[in-house]
Length: 332
Image 1 (cartoon, rainbow, N blue to C red):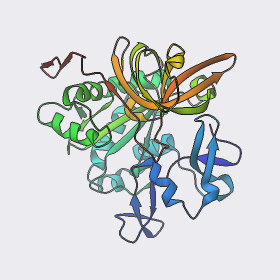
Image 2: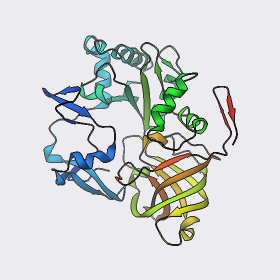
Image 3: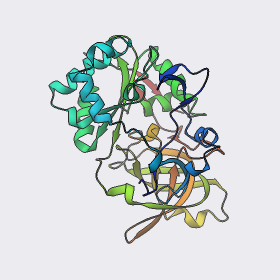
Image 4: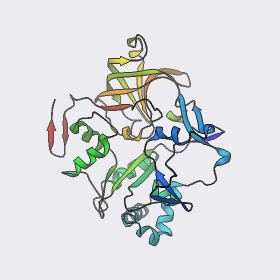
């Protein structure tokens, strides 16, 4: 995805006098809203880049300006081999070490990495644990890891409300039952020790090909009801679902119904929707209408991307979905 000139990405930490993270001898503030990168980098217009893959302007760092690369895989391995004492001092670090030891014992170290504050060395007592896994093998390993109750507990009971509140601020309008159903399909939970949030985003294998080679052209915005017809490529980021449009609710383009039968993909660069849907699910989608091309195939799709400062793009299970989760049954 990265052009020859830039490494694409958003600003995760930036210098700030009231920041609560220490990096390079100065205070940094954490940023969790991707589109805020545009404002943070307002004095660095060379960091605004058009991406053919996403079909829009995003942010990135000119390659000549990069002074340090961090490897999620190597950092995870280093935690296992050399950095135990320092990591334990960070509170949730002891839980992370237990999880890394379990990963190593299963021979899974090449399949996992650690990101976020533990990757760059600015974790504090409020830190979450953010893991990534690589490819189909990593997905299977993550599924087994998150089923191990010795190191990771599930969100259940009163903790489901905690999970709902954690996600609802990014997924405005989602009903409790349907949002919880989506969230419990993903790799996340609470560490067995301190009860810190832990999640794992399953990434595609880091080799060229598949949806990363799709190019997009933005046409407008669209809101619709659809049914998921295939989720096989939706379990890894970037998630690619095949859908059938049931009804177009609104759009910024004229005569949106003319696109409806050719809108066959839902593509998400928002990790919140990786693994969230299954074939047969009715879904409500607010996203970017894009023309997608890959090789000789030309289709239309709805893209969920955080690279917009105008509104939030959302997808959720339609309210008619029957939810059977944690002992609850709900029908609307």
